[in-house]
Amino acid sequence: MLYPVILSGGSGTRLWPLSRAALPKQFLPLVSEQTLFQETLLRLRGLNDMAAPIVVCNNEHRFLAAEQLRAIDVSPLALILEPFGRNTAPAVAAAAYVAQDADATLLVLPADHLIQDVAGFHRAIQAALLLAQQDKLVTFGITPDEPATGFGYIERGAALSATDQAYAVARFVEKPDLATAQTFLASGNFFWNSGMFVFKAATYLAELQRHRPDIHAAAQRAWQLSQRDLDFCRLDEAAFAECPSDSIDYAVMERTQAAAMVTVDIGWNDIGSWSSLSGTCAHDARGNAVRGDVYVAESDNCYLRAESRMIAAIGIKDMVVVETADAVLVMHKDSAQDVKHTVEYLKQAERTEHLVHRRVYRPWGYYEGIDVGERFQAKRITVNPGAKLSLQKHQYRAEHWVVVSGKARVTRGEDSLVLYPDQSTYIPLGVVHRLENIGDTPLHLIEVQSGSYLGEDDIVRLDDDYQRIK
Image (cartoon, rainbow, N blue to C red; front, top):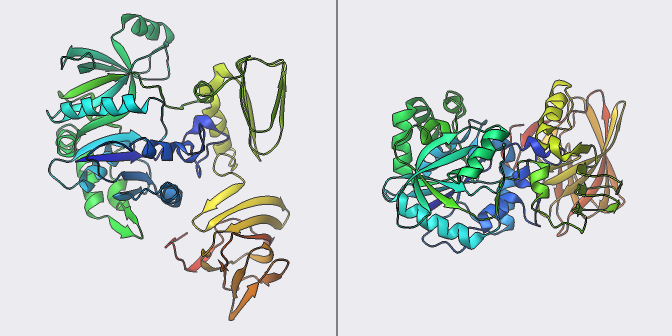
C-alpha cells in the first residue's frame, strides 16, 4: 500500500509579504484557485492502491490544514501536529509509524511545490515504487534547464534499470556557485534535488536508526506518547523537543548505501521565490505577469500582484511588486533570494507584518483589522454558519459588537440574547462572553475594543469547541 505523506510545515519567508508565519505559502492560492497544499493532494488522484494521506503540519496551522482538506473532500489517515519544527527527518519518521502494515511504502511530498505534468509524475512514482520494493530509498532528480544556484544537486551513478530513468546516487552536492552550476548543467550528469521521496516505511526507519539513532529514538518516543485531539494527532511536546533538527537528505540520504534516483522532467517548481513564481505564470507580450487590479504601461518582464489596492506600474523592467493590505514589496528580480532579510528585520524590530495579515483565520472564521489607535482597536469579524467562538473573558479590554449581517447568539454574563443586523451589545471588561452564528449564512459584525492592552493574548478561555488553550 502506498501512503502519501504531505509535509506542510514550511514558512515560505522568501514569498513575503504574501506568505507569513500564520499563513505560509503552502496554504495560499499562488498559481490557481486552489492552494499549493490542495494542489499537492489533488494531483495524487488516479494513483492505484493508495491509502488516505498522512499530513504533517505545525500545530499553529492545524485548522488551516483541516479546513483546506475539507474543502477538497479529502479525509486524511492522520493529521500529525508538530509542536515546533524539527525539519523533515523526524516528521517522516512520525508518519512512518502511522503506516502500520508491513509493506507500507511512503510517498513523501512537500506541500508547496508545483508539478505541471501530472501524468509524467505518476509514471515516475511507478518507477520509484519498483526501486523501493528492492529496499532502495528513492529521490526524484529534476532535469535542470538552467544553472540554478538555489537548489542542491544530485549526481547520477550507475543505471539501475533498462530505462534511462533510474540510477544509483553518486553523490549529493550543496547549492553551488554559478560557475559550478554551469559546469553541472553542461555535463548532463547532475539533477536538481526535488525533496520528494519514495521508500518503504520500515526501510526508512531502519536507515534512520542506523545513521541517526538520536533522531530515531526521539521521534519514536514522541509518537508513542502522542495524544488524539479532535481529528489531530499531537506529538508529545517534551519528547519532540529532545529530537535534533535535521533533513532527510542530511540524516539519511547522504549516508545510506541504498540511495537511488528517478530522473524526471515534469514541469516542477518549488515556488521558492517571487522570480520562480513569476516563471509559472502567463505573461503578456512584454513578459509581464499580472494578478489583481493592475495597470501596466511601458514595462517589461515584471511580476505585479495586487491583493487589496490598485497598482500602477509605468516604465519599469525586471521588477517584482507585491501589494497587500499592510505591506508592499518592491524589488529587482535579481534580489529575489534577499526577501528573507526583510523578514529578519521585522523580527528584530518586533513588528508583526511577518507574522500575520490583516485578515487572520480562526477555526470559526476570520477577523480583519480596520483601525487601531491609543486605547482602541476596530475589527471586522466573520463567523461561519453554525460556528462559535470560545467562552472567554478579557482582563484589560471591553468590547462593543455591532451586527452587520446574519444572526448572532451572544452570551454575556448570565444573559443570552439574539442579535440581528443593526443591533449591538456591549461586553464590559472581565465579563464572560461568547459569540455564535445561529444562522445559515456567514455572520458579519464590527467589533470595537477599548482598554489599556489590546493584544490577542488577553483571552482567558473557559470553554472551546476547538480545544484551544491559547
